[in-house]
Amino acid sequence: MDTPAPFGFTDSHLAPWRQSTFAPGVWVKDLGASDGQRIELVRFEAGVRFPRHTHAGPEFIYVLDGEAIQGGRRLGPGCVGIAATGTEEDDFKSETGCTFLLVYTE
Image (cartoon, rainbow, N blue to C red; front, side, top):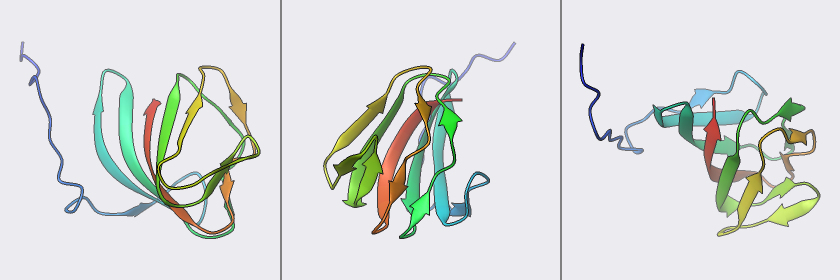
């Protein structure tokens, strides 16, 4: 049996952007995954609203640029949004466009 590597590395500059399968106007860079957790760089075009979804585990976002709106709250650069396991979300959007780091449970 192979022993898993203790560390994984990704150069985000080399990772390609791909269109999200969940919503038009959402672009994703897959940065890594381990033990059911994923980390992605996500870009929302202006006016995008993410469809209703339920969080399978905790979700963390860190806004890098632009502005996201989560639970009616505006999150600008440097802001963090946290959604608990089981949270239903149907109002995550960006009026201006934004880029954020996302860590979530698969």
